[in-house]
Image 1 (spheres, each protein chain N blue to C red):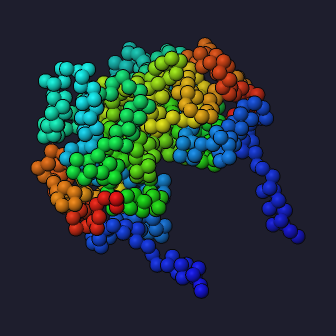
Image 2 (image 1 turned 60 degrees about the vertical axis):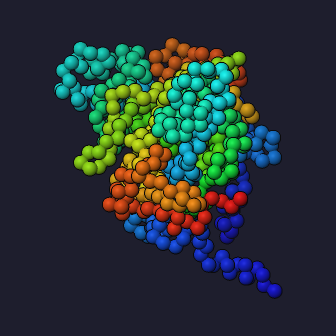
Image 3 (image 1 turned 120 degrees about the vertical axis):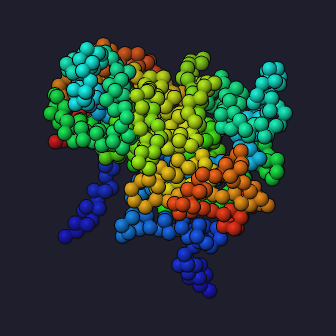
Length: 319
Length: 319
């Protein structure tokens, strides 16, 4: 007879903000950090404007195996354009793309990936490129999981993003991946607007086409947002130091170091890919997402290390 | 006897959001635009996430005469460091700085300014540089108005910024000036956080000094955020097209063209410096803030042109 009273009651029980995280040090550390810096009576209080959190994307917010998803996108573009470029059959990294030689491609690293992107997209406008990305994501599927790539995002990290924003954090992506490859979809998938995305980029050029201004993508690297580049990119785009940073590889090490070196309470977290069954297990010897030096330093400095197999109840959102 | 009723009443009278603007087409156009795009039942409605407004700084939010204030800052730094650089006495643009030759300096343009900044600040860290800027702003005064530079901001534009933000616009600075010259003070003065500042920049480099990570400023241009550079900078930092843009010179033309070329209702505004008494009067023949081609196009296209002498009740905030 008093449903409103009963349903009102449930609101008094604090809701778990991270339901896909098992109880343990990782979950506790996150909640302890957020509770502390948002408590106005705590000496470590941080005003909302300074609550900047930066998160890597590949391997931190979504999967990065068998190779970076952007590389799979570029391979598909190379194949689509191959008939116009007979020389690609004998030139790397195009030959590897055409032959699906993932090992050779992975070895070519972020630079190889950008070379593919540049070759397949130079001359396009920024708007045309965004359209190509959206079209690919709407149809392409992951070779192992047979799901769209935008479904291979980590459910526990989606909850973390929501939790941070509910506590007036501004969440930024800081990725080695292409800034214009991420922007067309991250708002819908992560709730992160394009102006809070930092990534690698090629140069663009303003010009008038048929009396209309366009930005044309040029085959020239503008910025590599990886390793030492991440603090540089953060400074360039945000102009203040994050108080919390989240990564999964040696490419994130300098971002984490830059973050924790600031004054006041700071938070650094490393995702350790330990789940060969539900996702992938890799670290020190991996071409993609190599986690070696950053794992040692995380352990030395007492950063939070997430053991994905044991700390996460689920990996991906339910189908 | 009913003060609460009486004071409550005044809230029913719509408050003028732009009290320093005289009634006229400029003020009307601004209010008409904001009212339209924020009205959910209007076909031209724009959701809050897409309400991006970009504003030039020099000559649009604060004065830029006798020369860009950043140039006056750089001159003071050149003088402070001159004893260590005897060669500056005979090398431009340093000689002009030491001799207070404003005309020669103005002629050197944004590039000359950046050359001075680079020469006087290479080797500093980003944090050291922010400290130097703040120290200078705390003591330096404008040669004509004898007020701190941060008081030579336009009161009507401060009201415009507040009005836009009250209507859920995100306000960005897009300036030819140095991004790291603006960030230390624009949050306090304009209410614009550092992550919403786009400007020219020199390169920085991540390195460890005494075990602590720092970003060192290098004597190398990274990006010139002027003319064709403005849409490029907007795309790089924001990743979506503004729906409203505000400028005062030919350096802003491409930003305004890029803005109005988007789909849906758009707004472009040019400040015309017409007030020789209260500020400065200049346009087509000016070294600083030249307004020539953009004025013609504004008139052709029906953009809003503010006549500062007649449209503004006051120029600067009261002392």
